[in-house]
Image (tube, rainbow, N blue to C red; front, top):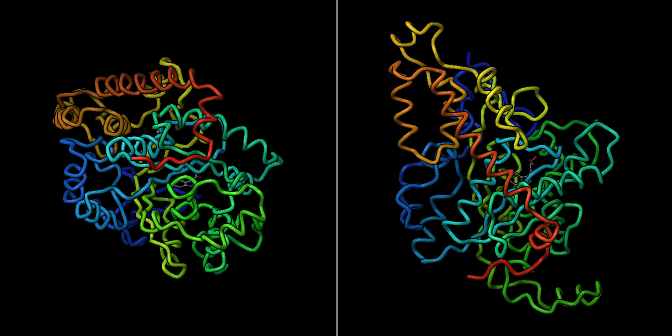
Amino acid sequence: MSNTIITPDTVESNDKTGLNYKTVIETFGCQFITSQILDNIRKLTNQTKLHPFFENDIFFAHRDLDKLLNECIANKSNNFYLYTGRGPSSTNLHLGHLVPFMATKYLQDIFDVPVIIQITDDEKYYFKNNDDGLNQYRSYAIENIKDIIACGFNPHKTFIFLNSTNTSHFSHNHIKIQKKIKLHHIKSTFGYTDDDNMGRVSFPTQQMTPSFATSFPHLLSNQYKDIPTNPLDNILYQLSEPIYPDIKDMKCVIIAAVDQDPYFRTLRNIAPKIKEHQPIVIYSKFLASLQGKNNKMSASVNNSAIFLTDTPKQIKKKINSFAFSGGQETLELHREIGGNTDVDVAFQYIQYFSDNVNIVQTIKEQYTSGELLTGELKKTCISILTDIVLKHQEIRNKITMDDLKQFMTPRFINQS
Ligand code: TRP
């Protein structure tokens, strides 16, 4: 029987064709992204073809994206911001880590909206069973932020922050969310036990808080001016002027891999109780590990991942020696019955990272018919991945601390 487990901690299946995303949608209660939704995105953004992430069904599930798009069409304005994040567990990102950031950067470009990126140094500190101090994760965070900036975010419309350095508005909303969520709910949703540390149990609400525009009036409201820096004056100001009408109806669109749903599903349930909008979510499938589509790429599993620091030689070796193949045992058999793109990992990487949707279709047809051989398919994959990784390295190497400072400085990022 096909069995798929997806939680923020575990992603696996016993089936080589991959994780069963249909079951995920049913158990999580999300919707599939339909062709009608893609049409509406194209219409709103004047695109004829969208990024392969959307054309190739990699971002496949959502909550309320249809409603948001209808609202944008009716109001002729994109009154939302994008929110995504990263848990800085090591300095070394792999290609799978890049997917939500590449998607968010793409959506920022086509919709021209603000982006908020949360770096959860607290999360990794609470979750790892080792003696590393919080500062270890903060230093990973700095390295990870370089990779994130290298994805090409608009510096005037993007804010990146570490959880351990939050602002008062953020705390205000965080406190309200915490009050509405019961411990038993967190334990059953995330599988935490009484042996887990307090930080871990209370972390989920940290990840939920950026989903409300009111957590960031200093970034999103153009009425937020000349706020007193003294804590007492600041509170007195907030008591006299607690809301920012211009961001009251601003929606949040969360870009994440589908394992992050427990956070946002929980938040959507309580949002109306604290008079906030439910965030919209868009979820991706996982980038397969080199060993097969039944596991995701993982930095901690040897040879399961292509890292952003890999050399062309390493990429070539990993794809040729490790990428699980859907090709047949012998040339004759392959010519006769063709390859299986459903299980082929190199094919999946092409689907994710080729910028040409038509080529992907041609490769699929030629591979399934036996015309294209595994070696040839892998060669195309290697060339696409090498190109992406080398370009990334070139941009990342030029990123300076001043660039980081620009992205991390709290400032108004919602100008049209
Ligand atoms: N928990 C995520 C991780 O481990 C990081 C994260 C924080 C995130 N906020 C987010 C991911 C919002 C997606 C959307 O990587």
